[in-house]
Image (tube, one colour):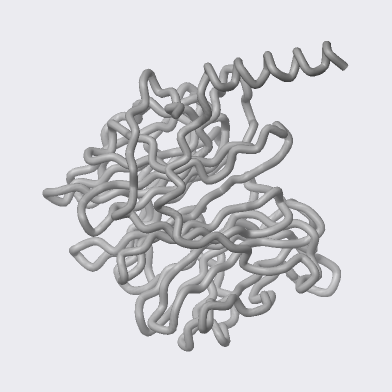
Amino acid sequence: MRIIIVVLLMIFTMNMLAGSPFKGEHAIKKAEFVYKAEDVSFPSCHASTIAETDEGLVSAWFGGKHEKNPDVGIWFSRLINGKWTVPVEVANGVQHSNLRYPTWNPVLFDYGDELFLFYKDGPSPRDWWGQLIISTDNGKTWSRRLRLPEEIVGPIKNKPEMLPNGELICPASTEHNGWQVHMEFTSDRGKTWERTEPLNDGKEVAVIQPSILKHPGGKLQILCRSKNKRIMSAWSADNGRTWSKLTPIDLPNPNSGTDAVTLKDGRHVLVYNHIDPDKEWGRRNILNVAVSGDGMNWQAAILLENDPDPDSEYSYPAVIQTHDGMLHVTYTWNRKLIKHVVIDPSKFELKPMQAGNWPVM
């Protein structure tokens, strides 16, 4: 017994000396699950998206037996009077009576009078194709699915952005020729499309799932998930038509999706897994929020999840700022639930990160 007590004291002392991770939890106003496990028929979920309509928040994700299973459909919920509605399936991959594909990666965008929900059908991310459904009543009812044109996949994971010239820019990527990013544009709500060539070779620089930040002077920046062990960034000065070379920022990426948003005050917020890819490639048991003034130099803001179990998963975040100034983040919670967190950005207590390391208290 004495040996056990001594060992426990030693561990406690070492932890105290090492310090605990900075949490920044004072900025969190609310944390909840979008639904209860007993209220849905699917055991697994992933890849949530969130948007604000004139009637409130809406969210979607894919759910089914497990990712890639043909029963996986797109599920949708609305936040009404402070409570999320019971999720309903609004799209699936049924092709005909004898063939059904899984669906993937829904992305919501609200035009005001129309709510767009982009998603993908297909057997795998290498072979999927883009689909679109539209609601004119904030998600109560939906149109029939519309298949996007050949080579147009729609926003691949993260939200589109409306440009000053009236074009909707959709951050897209493909995986059939390595991991490659490109941009897609529509100026007429999806009736016609344009796209850039890939911004990277897919091999030496392998990136997908960009998110878009807006900077003064009309400059755009993308932040991307990568196989290069760092979040990768590129810049555009012509509304996303051409881009600089993709280069790493000083934040890790252990092969996990991220999302980012530019706030009304000009700051930028990034939600990501701050995990050392050299030590824990593929892990997603820690989820973080960072803030930057320039898109390149980031400070620690909030530790959303910090699970000692390396097999736990908190991943694929989506983040928006609503008209009241609050930040809303949704993310996958252990592939079982979708979690929703409300953050007050005026309450951020920012801490510097030295050499890309998350700070300790």
